[in-house]
Image 1 (cartoon, chains in turn orange, purple):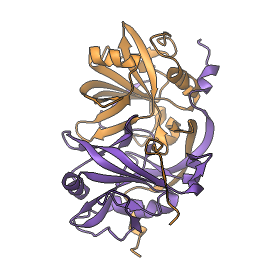
Image 2: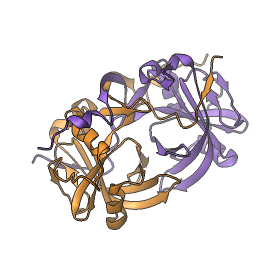
Image 3: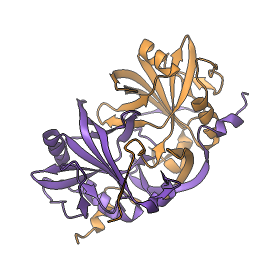
Image 4: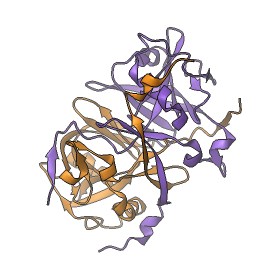
Length: 188
Length: 188
């Protein structure tokens, strides 16, 4: 076996989905780029984002609302910009055209194919990050991103992130159907 | 604006990374396919997996240890198999060749490019899922999966999952450098 042990902090997921997390801080919409994000509950639909000590957090802590916006490849530069500069120094409220659903402190991005508004369900303090768990209140998309009434990742055209090499990647080829192709597997 | 509202439970992340979560149940290694997974803390490195009520959970609850294994495309059928059948009915201990590091209840998969053993840090009960947060103890890989001493996603050759269409996808093209290309963005 050729296994080697590497530093325990050097492993991430391959690849990570990229989202823009939004909150309202001091009355202005603010967004940050987040790759540490996951759906975490089936019913009700909960999502979690793991944030370091960022400006965005202030808005979530205060208003108990946030948004998750899934950008497409055309928004990669803007998304990266939101990861490069802090809202404490740079007003990011005009980077995107925004809209709001029912939640007035969960800013949504018009050009993002999928926009999710969340009410804070729980905030779990971890040693260096806070895990914000949000309950999905509204999900916005457009007909052009759907096929047979389901969100279609080919139409969404998202991008993904890898660390620690810090690279963005497109979606590749369709490889098969989940909860299905495993039927072909015969035990050795 | 052409936004439409869809069912709040119909949104996922696009795409999700796919891992095999492992635990030891009744003395045997067991694995399940998981797409609801994220790194959640920088230091120490913590990962979270959100599991429904599965057989795997018993092993984590009892032994306070689990593993996260990142499969490559060649393991897609086996991975999907682990998502199709429950360990309560089917012994999955021989689906993969396994090894162990220091943690004797965190089974690692030899053929997976990245294997992470975790000690349970916290288990958070959510309405239908349990969010198991694990602290990374050891990370195993092979030289062939690295470039300049960093894990290289092109060499790992992972696959991703989308829901609710339930499809697997390969990694696509490199699109640019994160924490960098945003410098090109000029505010409108």
